[in-house]
Image (cartoon, rainbow, N blue to C red):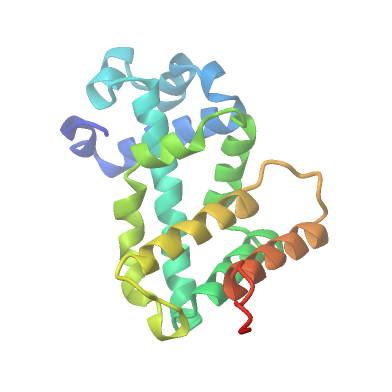
Length: 203
C-alpha cells in the first residue's frame, strides 16, 4: 500500500505518478518495467518515489487494485440494472467487455494481463484483499434467485463466478473470435446455473 505521504500529495501529482506507472506496465511485462522511466515521466525525484511506495511490486499491486475496483464498480451498476440477477449481470459484464465499448480501465487491465501471462494471478488477488473488495456486491444480489443452502454459499458462488468470468473478460489469449469466446462463456455460465451433478433417479 502507498504511504501516507503519497495520499497527502495534491490529487494532480498523485494521478501523474499513477498515470506514468499505468503506461509503463501496459508497455512491458512487470519484470521489464522501469522505475526510472516511471519517475521521469512523472517528473519526480527517485528518492520521492520510495517515500510513496516500498518498491515496484507495491506500486504494481496498487495499480492492479485500482483496476479491480473499477471493474467491481461496473459490476455493482450492472447488478442494479439486472435487478440483482447475478448470472444476468455477469453476462452483461462479458458483453460490455467484448461486444460493447470496453471501459479504458478494462482495456489497460487486459494489456497488463497479456504482458504477464506467467504471473500467479491468485496470489496477486489475495494480496489485493479481494475477499473484502467483493463484499460490497453482496447487498445488490437477489438471493431469492439462487439455491442457497448455507450462509457461506452466496460468497462461494460469487467467487466461483469471478474465477470463471475474470479470465473470459480479461482474457489475454485472443486466439478465439468474439463469437467463439461468447459461446464458450455462455456455456460455462449455463453449467453453473443448472449444476453439474445429474438428479438422483428413484428406484
